[in-house]
Image (cartoon, rainbow, N blue to C red; front, side, top):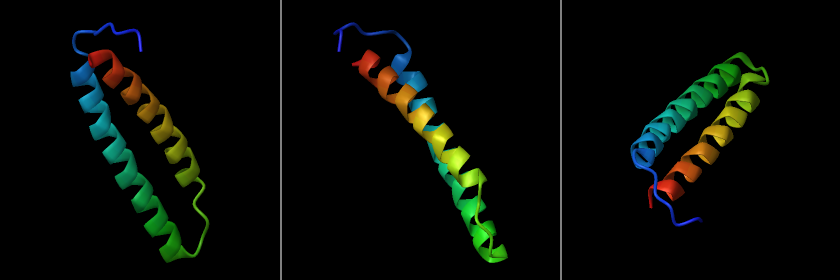
Length: 66
């Protein structure tokens, strides 16, 4: 947006993409476990909230690295 690049922002954005993948795996495990037990997973909603926050940070850092 500002046209200014920040050193290291791209590397941090890449690490956050790994965190997003880890959250996705955790959410999948929660959903699978809840489905097997026949219950509604509450943790899934919180994990998706965390995922969105990390995605937002990743997008900002990606912009700063370009």
